Every structure is written in structure tokens, then in C-alpha cells.
Length: 408
Image (cartoon, rainbow, N blue to C red; front, side):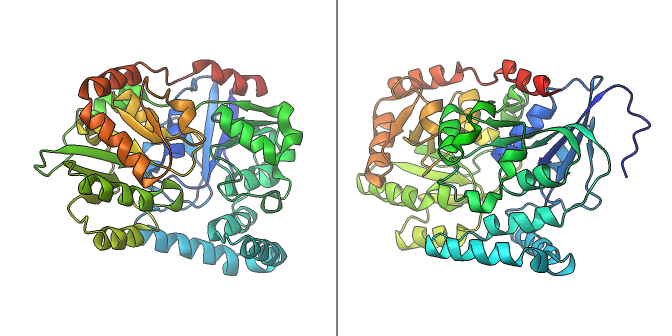
């Protein structure tokens, strides 16, 4: 039971998110919560999986509703083990397997038929159906991610109004109408983080066009710049071109193609070293590919990092070679810190970068990635002009807050 005695005439807003791990959506949520005037709004947060190290960065005026919480990184080995325990607890101890058996079997067969089995997508419904319930009626409930948090907000939160965020290329990420079970029909507003995300979402849900609008990610720009000046960053004494990529080691982020591109650069005699900040389920696979390609000293997996910003500030080229995106927080961080950026020409990325002006967009092949990087290394004045243009990009669209205020 939530104690309402201290709440006067403030509007109450509940944010729901799947985890609070070190990732882009979580950073954007923290920045968004900081946009609210605590004298006018009472903010709450519920983390569906009750896990993630960024819980310690939640603003002081936000009430976290989780009764228990694990602050181990969702990307660390121990964190992944804890997530498995959470899922098994939902399935076996809280009756999720019995309750959602038909849903699990039906969607599992659909995934197998489509040759794209994704356990996480399958389990979000179980986690939503077995999560905590709260008696309080909120003025607004906001699901900040697709999947579990949206299912939970649509079906189990008592709120006068409900909204949901979409951060990804919906169909490419593996979500389907069958998985969603009608959750978006129960929301008053659907916020997409870019125009392309909106366009791709409406290909799946054309009937929701009238209530779907763009709400760009927020970043805490001053904090990013301050943290970039802190101690840290590259610890080796490498004197060649440093390439940096920040992101989870997953299929979406395309590190398999990046390794191939690095092999091409090395074969061309370009003195460069590629660093990756992040962790994820495919780390071992990428490590094996690195070793097979003989790139142990050339493609370096640094792991997850609490403060990635000194690396951005010290890198020569930021590379974002992803298969698909919604709107990349990593690209925005690189722009804030004035990096020259090379990124794949895919949904999301092309909306953030004007090709040839504030960065380079490349076709998603190893050769084209290598060509873009080589072009920047051989034209330092051009790279410097692009970096300056990137640093002058408008990042935060404060006017987007009106979308939430209208619901209240």
C-alpha cells in the first residue's frame, strides 16, 4: 500500500520500465524524470525485473515502488543469473507457467516458424502478469519501454491516463501483435522517440495513428560534459587512431560485422584500434570471432563502464555500426561531446546524422564501414568540421514535455 498522506494536490505519475541497467533508454528516463518540478508532480518508479545498477541514479524526488531490488548489472554474468532466477520465480513460484501456458506455447511456435526465437520477448508477458499490484490510482502511468512494462501498464496499473514509449524499429526488433495481446489499444498516447520509429510502429499498428506522436529522448547534457572531464578513459599507450563503439553486445549492435570491418582496415595497413564499451549475451561469440580473425590487439572488448564519457572525449572516431535503431542515445552522447561519427545508414541513425555534414552514414557491409573510417582518417580537416557540426546539434526538445502535460 502506498502512503498518500504526504501527497497534497500534486499530480502523480508512475513510470514503469523493464530494468534499470546501463543502457540508453534508462539514461533517457533518468533525464526525463529530472525535467519535472517536484513541487507540482509526485513521481514514482516501478522496475519490472527489479534489477539494474542505474537505480542509484534515480532522482531523490522519485519514489521507487519495488519491495526488493538487485543492483547487479543486467549485463554481468551474476546479473544474468539473477534475471534467470527472476524469470523462473515468475514461471514456477508465482504461477506464470500455468497462467500463461497457452500464450507461451502459441508464441513460441510462431517464433520457431519465423526462425527468430527470442526468449526475452516471450517472457515479458509472464513477468507482467506476475508482478506487484498497487492500490493507488495514479493520474498518469507511463510505460517507458516496449514489452513487459507496456503489458503491465496497460493491464494492471490503476491510472486515469496511460501512455507508452516505443524506442525501437518495432517489427525488426521482434515484437508482434500476437505477443502484445492488444496492449496498445489500452493506452491514451503512444510516444515514439523519432519520426522513423513512429513510421515503422504504425506499419504494425496503423489503427493507432491518431494517438501516436514523437517524443524525443532527453539527455542530461551538463552532467555528460562534467563526467567527460573525470579521470578514466583509455588506459593503454596506443598511438594510432582510436575507434570507439558504446553499446550492448547483441545481434542488433552488429559487432560481428564490425570485426570484419576491422580486419579489412588492418589488411589495408591503417593504424587503428577499435574499442567496445559494453557487455551482453554475445560477448563470448564476438571474442571467438576476434581470435579467429587474429585481431586480439586490434578489436578490444573493454566491458561495461559506469562512466563512458572520458572514452568519448578521448576517441578519434565514434563508430555506430548497428543493424537497426530507434534513436541512439550513444550517438547523441557522442554529439554532445563533439565526436566525429560514422554510423550505419539504418532507421534511427539516418534521422540523427546529416550525411557529410555532421557525420558519415555508410552502407551496412564490412567494406563500406572500413571505407567510411578510412575516409575520416585520411581527411582530418573534414572530420574536424563534422565533429564541430555534431557538437552544435540540438539534443533536447523541451517542447515535447507538452505531450505529457496535456494528458494531465
